[in-house]
Image (cartoon, rainbow over all chains, first blue to last red):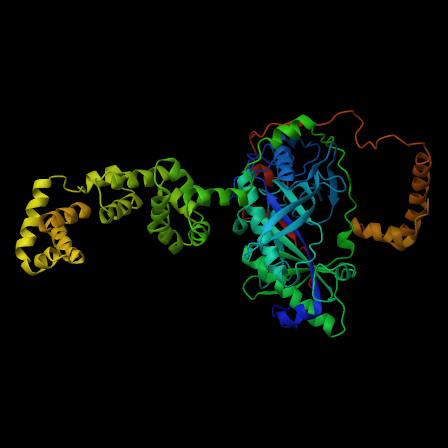
Length: 517
Length: 98
């Protein structure tokens, strides 16, 4: 294949939507963050040196026998329950046979026609506040593959590579594949629905604490199936529209950010529409998404490659979760993320806009913990969305990761707020203290002590400063005596200067007003 | 049980990455046919109400706790590899150019 990518024709999105009805199916792979792999005791640490987390089982050496990770099964059941699925009373693993060196066994241990969880749904909130119900076909257990590095050729991609280097650290890490039923009726909002679904799924998996769900690290990956059928009338949910047979689908791989999910679906819709409108037909194939150029290109055609000759894995016995186990796991499910957000917003008294800022900053958990440590919701929001968010953004990190790396904890922020509410620090001093904490100088109290930051509590000194400033500004003082209270601001500024910033501005204000009224 | 065609055998050989000559293909059609016929006899057994079995022992839920056990070293892991580079298994180019 040449390296130049020929640009395919695409139809304007609005025009495509006027003529066609999109149907999607999303497959999301989630790596569980168990300590060990699915079928062996090798660790699962991300970023380890190549081939240092492998053993005879995950290398597929002769005679090695897999044993199922109990925690992974429980996580799979919890995911199924959170997606309102039925949990199989009895299910098996199957071998998915293929020749591709990312699995050293020449097969991937997966589940075929007996998934552990099936027939569920996830309600997804869209930007306008409406809800779209995504029907879940199944969630099944399998194992991740190794990572290949393609050497030679002009790019790092498979085509044109001279040979490949494989690291099997990732091979065997527990993976849950969550497959939707065909998502119909989304109409022109299909790309938004796709993104909202993956986002809601990520929030749910994070709340379940079963995965790191870091799309950029590949612990959550999305394949997007898209097809178009002729549009009938204006309502994508009308019986006439739903009765139209589905078109041929393509499956776009490599869609590894929320934004890409939306863009890739939109692109495929426009590409399919151009082909269909010109009288062509869609080739059922795998497409590769290119984040940089925003287009998909043709991958392997699905022919022989799809013939995986599945059969029940003879080295593993069936998984038959007791109903007692299922019910006890149901008891461990967290509050659904959407409900939790609304509850916290109510408790904290944030406006919709404020809550959106908090969500966008990824600060919900931090604020929750800060409030639990004694800070007011307003103060917790103010401090987390201020300097720490700004610095996290500047370093292209999420706030939680940044805070963890720099050592800023919710307890610190609550302590800082306490120093302000107790009257030891004013706002500008508190900012200096926060800078100190971010610079690694210690806890807020330690930083305030070390930097000698403390409001002067000596009322005598403050009163002397007030007297001095009033005497030096007879004009302003006269205005205040005449009732122009706003003029006090000028005097407060000078008092603060006299006090080298270490006075309580509120106290200075009331002293000035007391003396002049 | 429908018999195996020559194309079926060629297809299976392709999936298994086994190169068969024309003569071998002809022979395999016959040999595999005999095997299939034998298996077909087993399929005549009355299995109504009998759960499918993939394992000879009546066991379920054999699991292990999620506790790390020692892995091999990279040297050990790569010791059986015909070729390695950058502490990784070196393998032939995967897909032909297209």
